[in-house]
Amino acid sequence: MSRFVLEAKGLIRDYPGRGGLLRKADPVRALKGVHLALEQGTTLSVVGESGCGKSTLARILTLIDPATAGELLIDGQAVDIARHRPSAEVRRKVRIVFQNPYGSLNPRQKVGDALGEELLLNTGLSAEERRNKVGDMLERVGLQRAHAGRYPHMFSGGQRQRIAIARALMVNPRILILDEPVSALDLSVQAKVLNLLADLQREFALSYIFISHDLSVVQRISDQVMVMQAGEVVERGSRDAVFDAPSHPYTRQLLAATPSTDTEAIRARLGRRAALRAEQTL
Ligand SMILES: Nc1ncnc2c1ncn2[C@@H]1O[C@H](COP(=O)(O)OP(=O)(O)OP(=O)(O)O)[C@@H](O)[C@H]1O
Image (cartoon, rainbow, N blue to C red; front, side, top):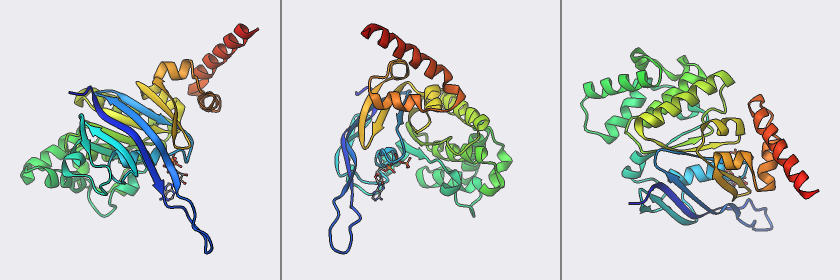
């Protein structure tokens, strides 16, 4: 059996170009042959600036959108990436959490119903068993059983993201695709949600693809990091290798431009490396 829970090979995604009246526009190639391999129980972060193709990649890995070409393997088994909707099996194994839980939760549906619906669609549990499981999961993500009767607007942003994570976990997935999951949250709330994700990963042996433009967040959560620029992977490696000794100029540029105080240490190290390199070339 493959040691990778998720593998993508040569993923290509073309979007139709926006043409004018007189000319047909060329397609936009958002992914230009992306490879990735996610090991069981680890976190692989995908970083890069807006427009580099991160969300396109997330949507293909969850089979929300089809790829134009390439291969995708889940637990070593090839899945059909030309499909527009994931099969029930893939939907159970790979779940996505978006940046804005408000957008992904139905404002008119009680939280308990949103979570219970996952069990109704994917399991044969009775109403009482579903209620119990929903209550357990709400508690597990730091909320209360009674919160099941409330609507999404009655929660803070951080709580709503906990609800989105709980919903993603209802059917015991193996892989979570986290698409900028803390980018809309205040720094202190970010830290709590990141801690929750780390605890859940250990407890449920989850594997994460963590998509973010924020290097200080990526540094906290990742095992492996891959850097994307304009639809291509320009650098990949362990977190420490990428942060301590970035080999691609674009990665160095991203690190140098990261403003958060959290990354003072990164920049200090980068400065030390750059100084060392400069000394060596003298
Ligand atoms: N539906 C679409 N039609 C045409 N082009 C698209 C479409 N969706 C994305 N693109 C283009 O594909 C490229 C990658 O976009 P994508 O949204 O995946 O990037 P991203 O790194 O997730 O950016 P952001 O963080 O801003 O969401 C961009 O050039 C974008 O303009």
